[in-house]
Image (cartoon, rainbow, N blue to C red):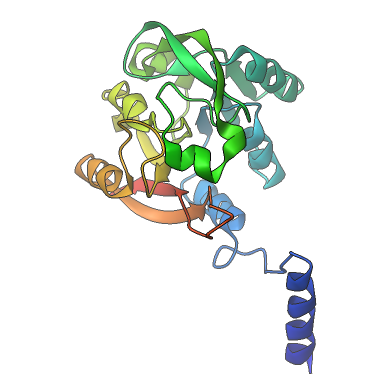
Length: 241
């Protein structure tokens, strides 16, 4: 009886564009991420490409209580990020990008803000999300993680780095060649089709990380083409082998 009732509830919910699933690691991506954070005793999350702080807020919502350090180069997004982190004593924010150089560079500003990138956007992306089209540029500061790692990590023992930099993930990793030996868990946004110029696609990034000693332990769905249902990007969570 309960099974039939539950099935009816699911059918009705889906008709209205919703679903009901158990909040547990085997079926819910956020519950799975929280379990990973707990399993590896994560005491610092490096939030690279923080935008306005959505990821940090989500971490707090799922119960992560330790340190967060966010990096966001865009001035408009950083202003909101700083406001979101302002009352959180364990959340630090930095107004610069991470990459494979130290200096000043230019970033493309997307109409939806969160698709902004240091790389040129390809037609596939604009077609799937017209409001992501670039509307301007901004000069920003960029640093290698290797240049600042000691000052940022401080006394943290188990570091988790999330990289959401719209195709620029390889550059962030290249600027962290020395730091990666101290980072056992990574979460990266990866594309299944080309969305930005010169970005590594999933198979290339998977091989790149495998060669660095990481294995894929979880995935979280991401950017989808609403017209076709095709998954264009997803997040892969990797842990050192």
